[in-house]
Each structure stands twice: as structure tokens, then as C-alpha cells.
Length: 415
Image (cartoon, rainbow, N blue to C red; front, side, top):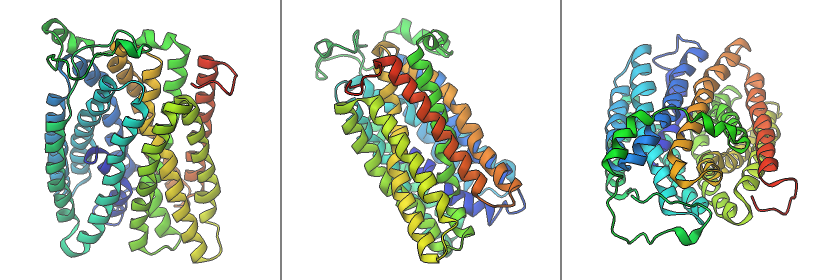
């Protein structure tokens, strides 16, 4: 997770480098498609990877994802043309991220039930740690060695991280028959093979389809749309916070550090809500954190551009980075937990893949739409920030609806 989501949480650093360097003659919307394609493939792949994971386990998928991600980063470091950036980062790194994060998260669902939210949150903090280390590493090495070599250093770090993932992430062969009965969970120390039987393997590639029956469950449908709305806006601050800070007069060195500040907040935002979700309800926690993100966008990010003094703008962006990082981390760590709560465990990989098949289209279009708004508004960030806030308003509405359908109007109900 540190390798794949660490790169995803460093999009702002990469975007600022391309805008001021190799792609300075391209519009922000055109550059946004590189990152939009990357996030789209990262999530879209789940529709095929889910059934393959159910049949084969995670290890082969993680090995292939490691090769794709590291190769993409290395080739990205020597790219000079738009189509090269689109191919190396958008496609290769997107494929690698999808092959890494989908089985890594799904494997946790095989081993944990009651503490699934807490453990998923702990694992997801890896992405935040990567989002702290990678931007600072690039900022420190790029002026001395060039942007290309700074990316190669990131790639070498990923080699070690991915090797550890290949060795450590394991699946569990038995498919739980009941998600609601802890007594049905067998001991993790029982001796079983890691993957399913040969007939199930033969069905793996044929299983790569949308589970339309899942949308008959209104809880799943509303949850999926809610996650779509979150992902539509989630990557906008991650991609444009650095360039926005530079645009309002913040020094470039500190503007790059804002991503590290954001991901520092995200470390706690991925772990703590997961811990709370197991105690106060997964959907309840998701609703609170989406509301928190909404407040930070309009309360801090939007107002930072209108503050009179340089110190006030800087302070507002620091507070926004920490608060948004804390709140937005939940969108990654609690989504699989919410999906797991409303489906049986034997369908978990398929439902999770189906959810992110839909969500991937939000990831595809969110960044380019924000970039197009920015270009149309003469590089003024008001419209971009308002669009980001609107996606969270919609997400809040859908998650509230999913919670009401699942547990009714009673506030004391843990759901």
C-alpha cells in the first residue's frame, strides 16, 4: 500500500512538475487526463481482479502489479512527450496500482470480521506514509539530480516495498459461509491451501463481469453511488493543492510540502476511523467523516484564496491539509468495510470489484473536469473548489440514504 497508494497520494507533486516542465504547453485539462486515466485504471481493474483473487489468491496478482508499477515509474522518469506520460503513468502505473491494492485490501477481508475496519485502516496508512515520503523525496532530490532521477529513486524504493508485499500478503482458502456469525470463522492456523479448487480457478476469468443482481439491494446501490461521489472529488485536492498554493503566493518549496502535511493527517484518518467504525458503526463513521471533509473544503480551502495576509493563507492551507487528509483517508479505508458489511463473504471479491468498476468512472473524470474548470476560469481556483465540495455534498446524501435503508432512522443504531 505504501508503494501504490503512496504514488497516488503524490499526484500533486507530479502534476506541478509536468505543468512547469515537459508539458507546460498543454492545458490543465489535457494534463489532467494523464492522472484521470491512472486513477480510472487503478479502480476499473477490480472488476476482473476480484474474481481472479477469489480463485487464485493475492500473491500472483501482487507480483504482476509490482512489475507493472515499477516499470511504469522508471519509464515515466525518461518520458518527454504527452503520449509517453499517458502510456507510462496513466496505463502502466494504473495497472500496477490496481493489481496491488485490490488483492491487498480483499485479503484482509478473508482474515478479519469483527476488527476488519481497524485492520483495514492500519494497512491503508501505508498509502499515507508513501504520500509523506515520496513528495519530500522528490522535492529534495529533483533540484540536485533532476526530476527523472528523483522518480528513479522512488522506483528503487518501490522495489523493496513490493518485494515485502509479495512475501507477506497471503489469502485464506476457505470462503466463509456466514459473515454475521463469528462462530463460523475457522482458526487462521488451520491447514489449507491458499487458493481455491481447480473448477473455481477455471471460472475466474469468466467471472469478470458486473454483478447486476447486487444493485437490486438498495444498500449496495446507494453505497456504490456514494463512493463514486467521494472518488469524483477525492483526488482534486491531492492533484491541485500544490499548484493552488503556488498560485496564491505560497513559496514553491512549502507548496510541495503541503502534500506531505495532508498525508500526515491521512495516517491518522485511515487508522482511527477504522477503529471507531468497529465500535460505532461503519456507515455512521463514514457519514461523519464525509461531513468533516465537506466542512474543511468550504471552511479552509475555499477561504485560503481570500485571506488578506500571506501568513493567513499559509495557515489555512496547513489546517486544510491536516483536516482533509484526516477525513479523506476514510474514503479509502472504510469503503471495503462498508461493502463487506452488506454482502456475504463468499461474494466479497465480486461485490468489491463491482463497486469499484462503477467508482472508476468517477476517478477517470474527476481530475480532468477539475482541470477543464480551472482552464475555463483563467486559472482561478474558485470553480474547482466548488466542484470538489459539491461531490462531497452528494456523497453525504447517498450515504445517509444507505444508512437509513439499512438501519432505519434510529440514531442509536450501530450500523
